[in-house]
Length: 84
Image (cartoon, rainbow, N blue to C red; front, side, top):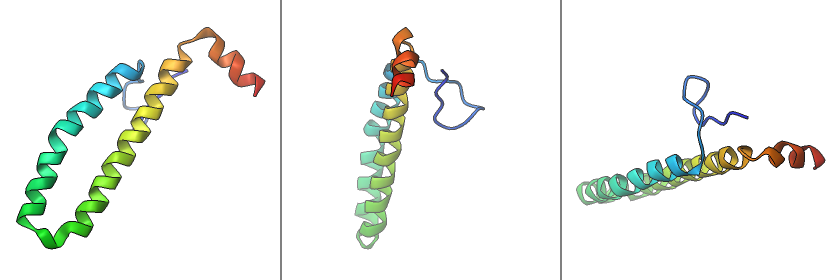
């Protein structure tokens, strides 16, 4: 089974580790950007909150896709999925 986050043009996920690395990169860069934006425009707090929620939703989706890719590596995965 191939698991992709963005579509067929993107390479399939190989497991959870690459996803965690990508999420970690995002967590290292985004908070500083968000802080800078908030300091420049305190009135934009509501929009910033939506942006932060959206970013974490995307990261959660990526994590779930990575978990699925990792689980699908198992020979038993397809058999167990058919039983449900």
